[in-house]
Image 1 (cartoon, rainbow, N blue to C red):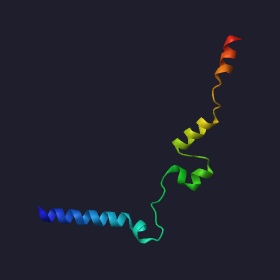
Image 2: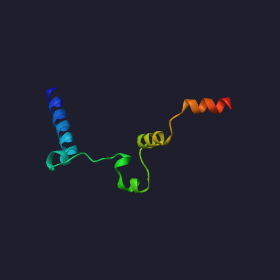
Image 3: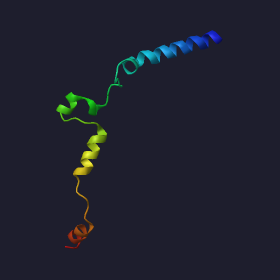
Length: 75
């Protein structure tokens, strides 16, 4: 039982170390940006992530003017 725990801990440590080679051993290293918005090719094609597209769409809509709406209804 104890040996299984030690082997598991060593394998887990090795996995984390191998996944983090770029982070731990490269100066200024960081995780790669795998989001759609981080891809230069997709930016060139005008493709963005859903959150960014939703935010842009909401910003393009003009705010609702209640008095103008009431005037249109009463006419």
